[in-house]
Length: 98
Image (cartoon, rainbow, N blue to C red; front, side, top):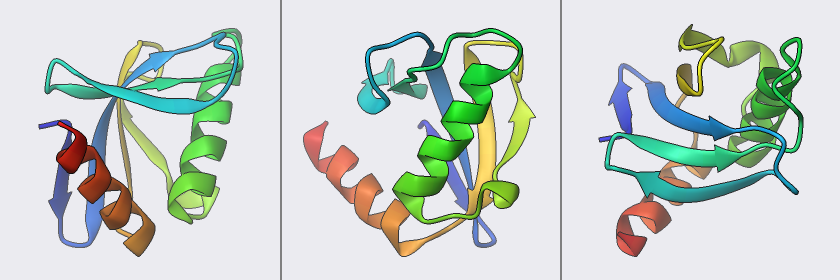
């Protein structure tokens, strides 16, 4: 599974695709990660900053609460943030689509 919820925190495994035309959630990538397209290029951390901004806006989480657990310099990343109602609603739509 691409996410784990434990003690009010979400660990989300992401396959990032930088330099896309827009920020968007895509398909579940091999049931191991959720693919997210990011506008910013993978240069000097720009894509990571844009990813944090996108997740913050999507799930109503303060940017400062989004932490990279692994993969800061990799396409496959694990980020952790507090569980929100917006994330739970998004998760239900993802599960129903697959």
